[in-house]
Image (cartoon, protein in one colour):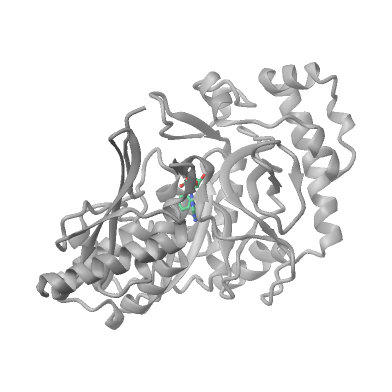
Length: 438
Ligand code: DLL
């Protein structure tokens, strides 16, 4: 009975004909624009300034006539200024920390929660999970959307949910083993920590039933995926989302892992040149802009995510007609400029993990010395290397320095540190520390 619910009623929209999907998107876009215009003064004023009416949106391309929205709009209207229904109809609030003081707040009515559990459910099914799985949710529960988002999605497909939230890692491993957990949802950095603790406890994850990881909420690289898969024997899937749009469940990889399918019947994607705002064709890299097509309490129109990716429109071997986005290696605001060179943390991770003998735990420290900006990369080495002779450690240091220089084109200071000295994360990892003098 549970199995029948799964594929037929939940995933139908993964396989719509492209023409039908576009028509559905247009119909939903028009509704969303009209609903937002009617109920959100902030949006109405912007459209009025542009002398635009909701009825002017007649084709999907007309979306380009609509103004972008940004994180600062949420901040300026804190806490509920962008809500499109009275608070009495809102049944859930979530919030994500902004860079300055106040968080950004998002709201859901009952209909929105239904959509959320549908898209997360579809996401989990897309990776091959089913009602037979026992899913440990180790994303944080609370204002962060990760825990509750994954929770209700997993319940929706009839899986058995183990709601551990983040933290208390030893206990997480005990429950994973005792409950026969088959899949885990958490940040990739937290899973690394769990895997490390399991080794310390003498538990080999490869001998447990766990076979799938649903990892997201932070950037991670293919190198990190390889390392996780090889050391733990699970298959690691990338899941993407953001609070402003819904939370987790905007996009996910299928077993072919050549990009993340976007649930396009609910979220309309565009890629823009972040400098000019110009819309770029599929295949070109730029900033992802998302429009919600079905949300009611907190609709978002042309939200600039700051996440850098490209749309992949070639058909996928899985048969889903949903377009994909390339793995998000970086946010435009994560990039730092050192001596005129644009550097992304993911480039440093890629370089580090290409070198043998180091552990996937690192910090990137930006500092100023004699008026010049520099990068120091502190990286842990494994016990074996740590006990090696000074000369061998020096050689490893030179190798890492070269690997980074080859990728970013800058010589950085590399510091090899003892195992277990870099702070582990139970949620989103913080890896960049900016101590530059401005
Ligand atoms: O991180 C929602 C989420 C929870 C997604 C659990 C996946 C799993 P926020 O806290 O609002 O929401 O942060 C959103 O995190 O704009 C990206 O910059 C980053 N991010 C999320 N997923 C990925 C991913 C949740 N798979 C911000 N790869 C987004 C890279 C990601 N970055």
